[in-house]
Image (cartoon, rainbow, N blue to C red; front, side, top):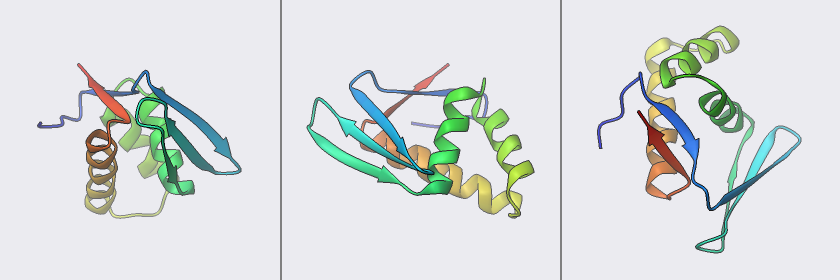
Length: 93
């Protein structure tokens, strides 16, 4: 599946998420498995959920972190692909 910057991310309906400090813990109610994200991954996911598009989340992350644009984009797409593979998120649009 090709992921485009204009698309939006949402959590799968079977996923419960709890933030603890700056990190997140996921429970996949369907598979009965737990997953975790560190503080940067949690911030990425939060912005992906709140933003109108992946591109908007990317722009906000660029403003918040000192990182090369290409490296951030690579990391963001890696996270999206990993969460998609695990069935934790869905692409909208």
